[in-house]
Image (cartoon, rainbow over all chains, first blue to last red; front, side, top):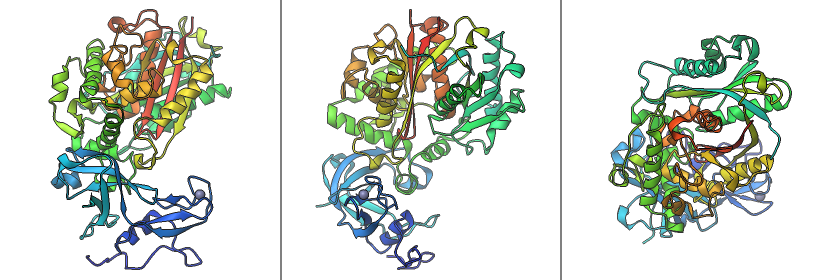
Length: 148
Length: 390
Ligand SMILES: [Zn+2]
């Protein structure tokens, strides 16, 4: 993996006690280390991604980071033929919503798959791009690929 | 039926379409002018107390702070002007805020409007600005376009309920049929199911003709407290129900992609306030940004059961002459979707229908109407119910 420049490895946005804040920026800084992370609410046990400070299920504001295995099932998908400009070279490409086994959901690009083989319910894995985007906010991209 | 919250005493709509060389200020003035001209008893400079205007994005024209600008261009400085933003539902939100101002007793006569200028930009440019209404870190950042969001809803609906691409296409065909009858519509052109099915894929299963166009346009309504409405017109249209709900910005955070919770919740509020049922609705304007959205709207508004939207379009229930004509204006699909103008334009169409001014697309005897407008991936949903005031 390319070295992180502006976002130094291991450098997270922390609170005054030194705890890694449940933020989108920190989610992507974990991605830079090859880790798919969510937060788990210490009140109701919900696994929440994208991470945030107030639990959308119970209003609790006490949570801890947990690493997800990055395995799940495809809930729905589409094939993008008219992409935003920075994705034009990739079109047509598949995107979908993944239901992770831990119970939270993420959208993303589906790679390493023939478009005709996409099926709702198929098993997918989360992986990370080898190169970092140059444009703001330079977040390392995750993507989905078939489990087999 | 519920008591009126406010009354519509006049409306104006600009021509929708490619309005070369005209920008939001001029388009908004065109709509306002028509609303003033339609209501000779209104003296705008003396009577109007506030302006509530919806616009989605300053990025199209590089122009923010539009509330004073539009007010200036319609000659009504210095009364208070408010701009609301709720993506594609921006001007339905403006209408609701205007209702609050009237229900509070603070104002008796206000303008509500909406506008957007889009066609001077390329499809790619517009795609990028529209995508801003979806979640940046998780949807935009991963290449998910706005049609892509609705494409994922369509795939889910097809998988869950057996809805077909032909049924989606029939929504576009119907709305183009209606657009032919509306001289203000962007398109006055019939299309066939085969045209839709063979059009270029955008976000499968959605093809070019499943998607509304980029359009320029504006719409404006004069809204009053019910007690003063008859000073301005003998044929007011009363707003008798209003509802709004919000959902996650990202589609991916929801439990269900085959429907729009915001529409269901907003409709429940509006039906309850108006004390009417779905079967009481004579004419409706719904948010057909993509054909699948109209199918889902039928279900979420209770025009049919969950998963039965495809059957409803097959049976012709929602075309002119059917039991509940939907999108007699041509809808977003054929009338056009200048994003910020859409909610106000839907209300204008219902006003025209309920005052028997809809000309060749008139639904005869229409007394109760409904509008449904959603923003983004249905993160904002607004429903209003209207009744002929006489
Ligand atoms: Zn919780």
